View 1 (tube, rainbow, N blue to C red):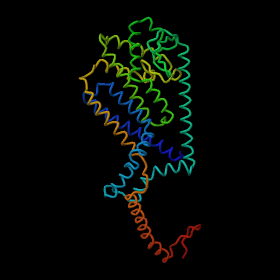
View 2 (view 1 turned 90 degrees about the vertical axis):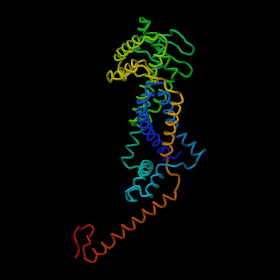
View 3 (view 1 turned 30 degrees about the vertical axis):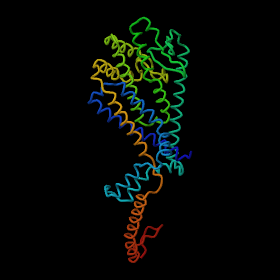
View 4 (view 1 turned 120 degrees about the vertical axis):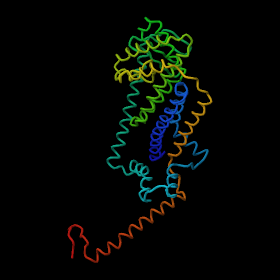
Length: 387
């Protein structure tokens, strides 16, 4: 694949993530005002689906443009059509320059390579390499933690391990085996132990480990994009809300005991250095990165748990919402594509641009001729007028 095609796919992924984050924030605001706002499991499933959709968007767009329709409508052509209809108050030359910003950027980064372009590419490469190395160290640390833990029980394909080093329980998986790592101190409190194991097993049912792995894999590509960190935070927060809500739905659930378990787990997690204890991909009972920012995340979880759940939203309603969200993301992905060739509207815009340039030159030519006749030419190199 050509360098410009790779760079355009990279830009499409980042722009689509911005658009996806904006769509999700709007959808979440609307959902919060309805009965759907307090049903977190469907929200998490929708967000996980869109995460996978964003990651696969370059391949999906390629498949759609190759198999379904070769020339889908794109944002650039739609803007040109609006300009030709007189809905944009701007000169044609200025409008064409704005439309060509992306093409000029790609051309500069891949062909011209000025100093700033080389510095930008170098910064992206260094950042991606650093994030990849950080992920590799986290995986090695996780592997070492699993090896140092002691096998305790086995539930199907899930192995329960005990660790003297872990301060908070977490779950992870290999290709075929799932692991729940429990602090040995939990053995002294059977109730906390039961609630913690149930919570971590719920993460497996929600496919949270796989989604966390996907987010970690995307980080080297999107490390500079603030929309990525917003999206990841939303996923992590929703997964805990969904887990807590699933626990509440169990018969004879002790709400007070569960809240006290979360508070104790948060207190233990705050004692674990965040920068030097990162293990990935793993999902913990309490996220240590959230405890480092204060009690806001725990407070939101406790409020969500104690608030309960409103009337159950219909599955048909969620199917409609999910379909609209997926359609909006895929439509945005197609609109971000570059124009395939010169359309009739683009030829007309180019003609208008040429006419504007000819008119500009015709307006300056009489002034130049008049200046020559009156002897007001400035001689290059001297900076004085010659009589």
